[in-house]
Length: 509
Image (spheres, rainbow, N blue to C red):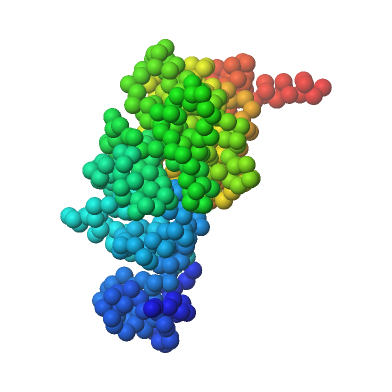
């Protein structure tokens, strides 16, 4: 049995940059763990980073202990944002005794490597590329789980096109397996209630992620339109972790909850799914042109009802024990984003914002269907954008949130900047500027992990600077125009400084 032993000696800096210059390789260290390429060929490894053999053959040099660190980082930083795999202990045990699932382990390491200094996501990405492109993929749910994690990592890494392709393939593969049917989890769960719950969660996570990516990258992504699902809704996180899975309920029962005789305590995950379904409906009606369209009212009613019918335990982003509830955080985020996307159609957008902040938009720019100002829709869009900004202040590390929060903040920023650009020049704007600063600060914090946050941060900063300069120049123009309009210009149109001086003198005397 292999033991992890001491970490191999490394010449890499914490940032992952090359070791000391000068061309001299450090002396060989005594190691008890070979890198993965040497281990797979049963060859000796000198423990360098990269080792001599990998350096000579230009191979990706990965040590098992680094891989394990990346997998641990996955559970510590990422898992709560997308909790569809079995809890840590159960999953690691399944890796030991179950069928080989190296592809899923690689997907965990790929995501986790974002949070580990010196780890290389590119090496894991290459392995996952090879896995996804092979012809005879394993016909089980772990393949869908792997592709789903890979798509999430690619999207956060600014590899939008590849992320979309992998996610489309994951949706089609899940439908081929029949994961949208209630029986699939029972048949393939190996008589483990936790495994069955994980399979159900995989289907619903695929649904939520597909809707979110569709909102940010266009309708081509979505392959689940019209698909009927009989898969029961997920249970609460504490029940999933404990393995005590309660009675299952369906989305149909969720919809009829107000008319049922029994009171069902729905999980935070279920409310998140319901929020995503409302967003799906809004995305499916992008042909609404006029505010008076009855569909606008009906869609808004969906969002209002979702909020009104939340139990008191789900209004805040903390559960009854005081633990931060990432699922409800995302549910509120999705609902506010849905409201913003619905009402911004009838709200004027500033060109500096909509044409500069394009990292999370489907066509490269955010368009409004009309340029006139509608007080009701403008007010609702503004409130939704402000609600998204307020989520930044939640007392939990920003890097623990889903990377979709990055795109939600970009849409919020577009709304803030558009409102700022349309404010009267002398109107108070400090509160609005603080919300823009808050969004930018959150993006800057998340860029440590996700390259997409760096792109969004740069675009928001540039747009904010343009609006600021535009308003500053406009204030100056108004100042001088007012002076000229008061008759303080001579016949040639130049300022009559003598007259201006005289006026000031008169005031002082």
